Length: 354
Image 1: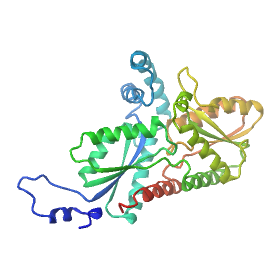
Image 2 (image 1 turned 90 degrees about the vertical axis):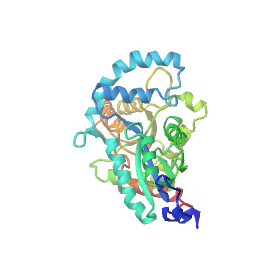
Image 3 (image 1 turned 90 degrees about the horizontal axis):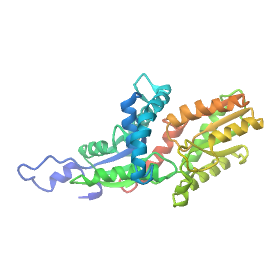
Image 4 (image 1 turned 120 degrees about the vertical axis):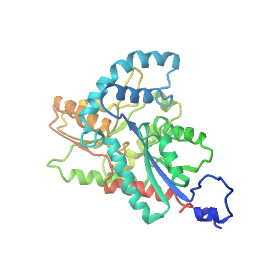
């Protein structure tokens, strides 16, 4: 029997199972797409639960617990759920009563499942959120129940950061620690410089610009920010972002002045990676730039930080300071270009299993 391609029938062919032996399902290969997370609703308590889980993660906020706990529980969680709830409500998918991040991640998994049929009929595709629902633990358990004795975890973060990629792995490994029979697990690496990813980004930019009645003077490449201290502690995130930016510029034949890089979504008093997106947008408008495009290649799916912060807040900043024409270039999402990237990663990382 070839153990690399064993099936449930192979397992049973070894010999009769002892009386009372639990049912056994093996031979399937799981692929679990993981994204950052989303609240279940936009009112106070769902937002509070989501923010508490997110902001309690030591990978996200590494302030000493004795200092952070009272700030989080007595101040932030008393005020921030209302404000963030209003922000989420402005970009909520009311038809499905969920965030667009959840909608898009589900669509990515559905399309990947269709493509996976041509790769290998044993592949089972699922999706999960690091914060909120469906949880990574619940979906790993579901894959195991389906008979997946091997699972590929695909963090949908092109650039590695401890606060994204690593914390998704932390949660998966916590779930594995509680399993009597663990599946064999692989984790796909960051894909910030993958040729398929760079080509897909470039193609999405070309297609979007072709729909406009103007040509942006500047295309701002905005990545999610992290405290500068994380870079100094050895997190490769900044380097991954810079390489994506460089490769994308080279693919499009654009100069650093035409395609700029910045970092968004900072909070708190300490210095974060610079230049800041909002300050850059303001400065460009005040300098006389009249047309601007923004793209967020660090996000695999559109979410609060892209739809509300970039296409909302930064559009207002640009127009308020003299800018005239603004466009936001959507994430790859479940587009043909986006799915080509995910499929390429999965096909490569499943080698030896399929």
